[in-house]
Amino acid sequence: MEKITSLAKRRGFVYQSSEIYGGQNGAWDYGPLGIELKNRLAQAWWKEMTQLNDDIVGLDAAILMHPRTWEASGHVENFTDPLVDCKKCKSRFRSDHIPEENIAAKKCPDCGGELTDVRKFNLMFTTHIGAAEDTASLIYLRPETAQGIFVNYKNVIQSSRMKIPFGIAQIGKAFRNEIVTRNFIFRTCEFEQMEMQFFVKPGTDEEWYEEWKRRRWAYYEKLGLKMDHFRWRQHGVDERSHYAKDAWDIEYLFPMGWRELEGIHNRSDYDLSRHSEYSGKDMQYIDQESGESAARYIPFIVETSAGLTRNLLMTLCDAYDEEKVADKGNEDDIRTVMRFHPVIAPVTVAVLPLMRKDGLAELAQDIRKELKEDFAADYDQAGAIGRRYRRQDEAGTPFCVTIDYESKENNSVTLRFRDSMEQIRVPRAELSERLRKEIKEYKRVK
Ligand code: ATP
Image (cartoon, rainbow, N blue to C red; front, top):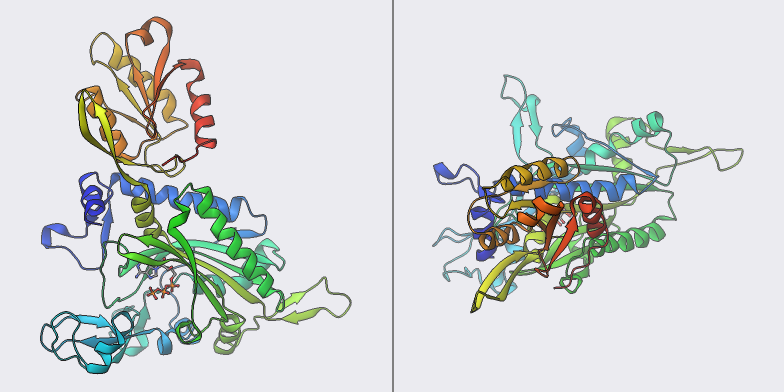
């Protein structure tokens, strides 16, 4: 993890928030490469969910919601973590994250000092809206994006004529006052989620649940990730959220061990029933197609809930590779290479003139201008060509296009592949088409 954190900072993926003031715990900033990676991960998910599914539409709900939302959702009452403090070293722990023996003996796992009793701690951030800081103006920062979907479900049916089964997808910020933020961007107080709520007829929920588990696994396979670093884990009855009828996590083998990447939940009719009760609005679906007497029911909801920023950490860990390369006779030369799938790589293609002189830089700029319309194309003319390749390897750029003297003569370029370091000659006129083909047919080898 240290290597990844250091590369992330050095290459501009992730910086500490407010670093010049010593950093802000639980918050991180995404640099030039980081924001590109984050956007591409979001786009890949969005495409998978909305573009490739006729029965899923998108939504972007506000972060600030009516406070009753969080009473109805159960978050005011139940969204708590069990907290203990060490009286001696002042460390703070989630009691469900340290060994039971320590809790039983009230013994700090770090220094052996005495632990306090376990107490409940609500994870929602509160603030006030308007000038008066009284309880009437109390408002929460949303701890999940899902509630924005539930409260809009009738609007979506009415405005876009969706019929059950159908889904609503959303990507957005969420906030949790996490007791312990550790492991870089894995668990942060401000993060982004990619959530999809699928509304189904009661009784068909278990079938749809299995279907969504299958689809979410297939999604990660499609991104060319190391699938032996993925596994399923079912939540035990006592660890399930207050709304869940069934809950499975897709876990990823991070450097600190297996951890949750995404949760697939059968939320039953809990959320819509509660919103119906708290708002006084009828949340039933009227099934027009069920014969003469139209059936009414509160739909069940199958949810897929993934962290976008946690997915970003996963892709950094998954892509990171160090490879021994024999370079200029130096047998022990190591190159660091980020093996991102071209669909998510921050830069898709880098255009590099072999020399700055003799019109090569101008020709390279011209080619880059052409590629920019369709690809995230970078340009680099600084330093020896070998070093420039290494810089692009570290940024995870899957393709480099090198312009040399031959390019001037016959309008061809060198196309270099990040993974194999293989180089081939391609006519300039065929370059875009070739890149598109390589992206589409990309297969990860290492
Ligand atoms: P945990 O039990 O680890 O606190 P959770 O089970 O409460 O997490 P969910 O509510 O299911 O998490 O959230 C769905 C997804 O949102 C998670 O799989 C994760 O990817 C992401 N996520 C949740 N909390 C955080 C956080 N504090 N920082 C970054 N991502 C988060």
